[in-house]
Amino acid sequence: MMLARCAIALLLAGAGSAVAGELEGCLSQEQRRAVIASRQAIPLGKALRAAKARLGGEVVRARLCKEGSELVYVLTVLAHDGKVTLATIDGTSGAFIDGR
Image 1 (cartoon, rainbow, N blue to C red):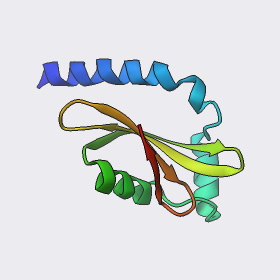
Image 2 (image 1 turned 180 degrees about the horizontal axis):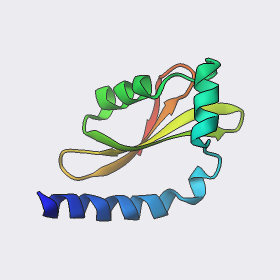
Image 3 (image 1 turned 45 degrees about the vertical axis):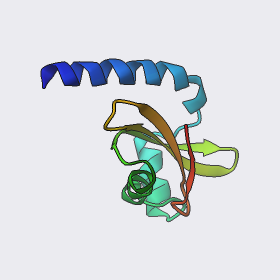
Image 4 (image 1 turned 120 degrees about the vertical axis):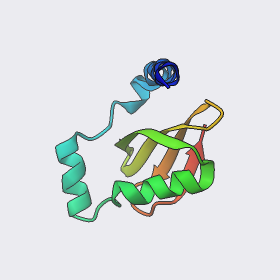
């Protein structure tokens, strides 16, 4: 079990560095709460369900980011086979946009 957790941590560290520049427009925790409370974005739970329904696996990291004038959730998903995928979910509707 400990070995599996270490392997996951290493995978996610590599995935995080690959997308660090891409996630510069992400909101802070306080900003996230404000846009969700004002109904400008859906709650994280809805985005998680959309990603899980489309990709399966486990979401291990979630960020709410601005892409132009739009809000999107960028989710790091760890599949059962160990593959790490970034899923993009529309932050206002919850629609699945992309999984790469």
